[in-house]
Length: 129
Image 1 (cartoon, rainbow, N blue to C red):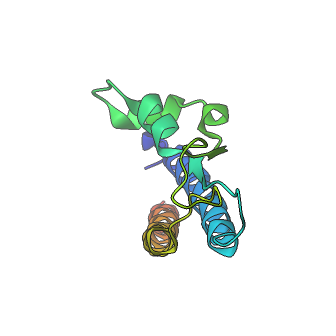
Image 2: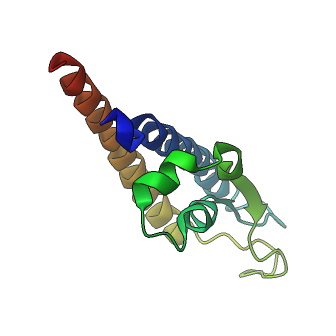
């Protein structure tokens, strides 16, 4: 297990969970500003960075083991700053934000489950040695 860079899997999962937690706050902020004139929807970029970091590999274990964690920092950006759904310049759709929030919460729980599973595997491996 240790040879499969299990610690790096945990680190990558941790970065993904951090990004998901950040997205949760950004989505909640979008909902809170749904009636603010001129407010533009924000989102968090992470999945693209992760996909780029593991793209084109035949050995995912090796790739994750060698991944540069500094390239996996999430960034917050304003989405479609020139787009407005309403005359007041706001581009937040509350229904879409609520769906994205629910989707993100599921993703976060799955990531937490995956981290717990990795620690359980490490614990089991330590017991057998």
